[in-house]
Image (cartoon, rainbow, N blue to C red; front, side, top):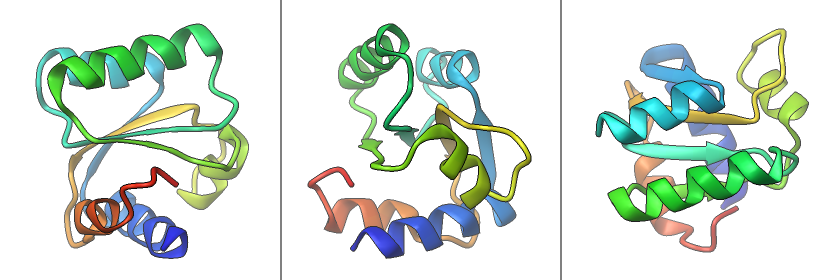
Length: 106
């Protein structure tokens, strides 16, 4: 369930196109390039609410992770924390399928 999302997230980062950060995530929603939005547990409340609102309007799937921003950065193999990210191209991953199976939003 959640483990497959984590595994597929790393695969998407390695083989697809992913944007990191709150501003980049918001831009990808507004220009309709995002296929999936991922938000860390400790994303600042104001930014989190704005991203959730924009994603809902644009009908883009959104996953609220239980992990904090530092853990998501580590999971993605990055030396920085990631509060929000947008999957533009899933590459070789099957993250969209994993999210659709687990509609409970990790």
